[in-house]
Length: 385
Image (cartoon, rainbow, N blue to C red):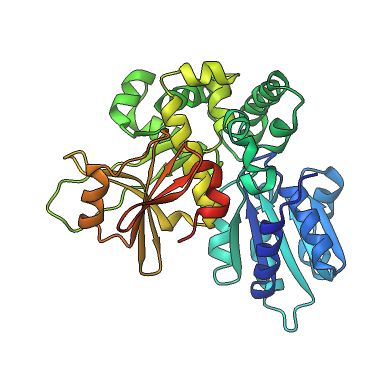
């Protein structure tokens, strides 16, 4: 078991501040294991209900208020997206004074897909996103392996690349055949498999519904719905554009990334470093991998991260807002990073506090005034904003 110390510390702090904390992440990313680590650190008596287990599901069928209301300490509810009707019950229980229990709910879908949670628990719940294993959890010496295999614990811990990609292929199939239908998705699995594979080839590009619909042979609305389904299931990121009040014409469509690099490579058939480095999507894959690493390392929420691009060619891979600070991040797979014209333009146009260039070299250093070069292998130690 890999200890996820930073996540445990954050969730314990959130449990002190909120009666309900939700850990959200795709299936098999390690939510249940993390909840066990939180329970041990929390120290209070813990009750666990797994809504995929028939016995636990049956306990909550008739009178969930009675069952949950009797519990004390820490109550963990796994796979909560299967019973969104529990959220009104949690609202009533969260409002008790004094509070005899805190609730840790685990879900494999975004709050938008579990609409009742945001409607019922406004002000009472905090969402904590759980991504793949981070560099500080596995060691920075494993950067290339983490990039190739992705961050799912089972893929990372596999004894070989072949075993890792066998697991990833099984994950994709199970996700399409079982997990999405359980969320109420009625699109056939083979259709979404083909769409997901097309998205893998689109990874790192600006979304174009019309072009994608023509390639896929369906309507603009259909491809938009497919994209939103995979985004809501937390396997795709739609990175929204930032619009600045400047004279330049700016891009207004989102950029599309597959959140896990291992899943991306499985869909592209890239199962070793040689094939990955030789593939045309290698640069885009590395960009997405670093982007997810930065977002996870800094604990950023979706409304704090954007990209920026002007039709003149100036762009930033990642535009971060934190309080009054604005940080621009460029990601380059190079060992000799340089300040680009695009970065200088962004510094002026967007009034950046700082620009960070993440590169593939081994050292971090200052490139220019308000510009730092940070090595990807040192993101854990050197990335501070």
